[in-house]
Image (tube, rainbow, N blue to C red; front, side):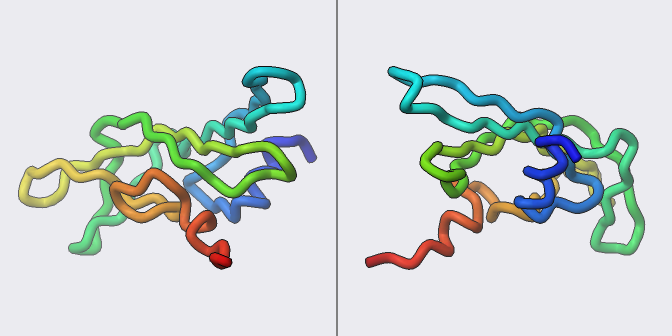
Length: 115
């Protein structure tokens, strides 16, 4: 099992989502590092529509979310989020399982109890 598979399991990802790569980057010094996880979706995956049909991605948007720290390292998720054309011709972004729409942080970050 490699690191991308381990991070995928830790994030609870399932088809069509997977961790494409993981990178550590240093900020000011080696003691301050960030973990960047790059997520992607399976090529050709058919996303379900509300009317029961399905469609492939129209295009994608690059998005970033702050996630829970992994150990002492800040963690950010980066993903190509697909947009799909729905029945009336409108384009909408696919909902991702790790964050609410238009959010800059993951659902896991909101689960941290305050105080």
